[in-house]
Length: 176
Image (cartoon, rainbow, N blue to C red):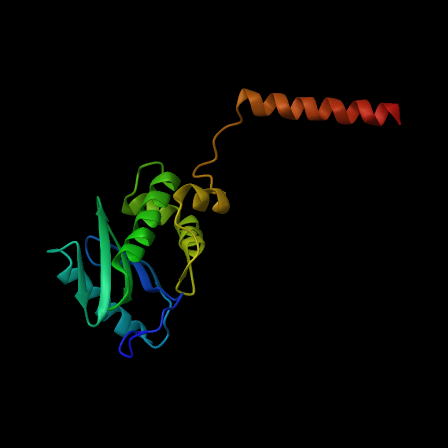
């Protein structure tokens, strides 16, 4: 290895945050405690990133590689170190975006995100843990989270399954 090359690390993601189109924080996870230790430093960084990223798809800012995606009134950001592989960060960003798309039933906007914030945090935690990328397949993320957006009424099949199960329990109790 070259002496100037950084050591490879599993800790790919330094931060992940979601802002609305007015630069308000909806969700933020900072995985490197030395990066921006205080809330004020984090918010200043987020404002700076928000102002810079309106012009480009990704950027290197303050020694960080930043990729982002916008959706209606949301901005999704994934931050890595300056020498981080941009494709790895894009993989995380795309997984987050697609997972939210599946979870929120293609209604990825501020209102539905806020209403389902508990599920959004679970999605983020399934994708990245402590800066390490755990999952990059949105289908797997949603399956692991086992998130059900709204409580839909029982279908005929589920009612039939409940009735069949009850019949079997009665049958077994009579046979005993």
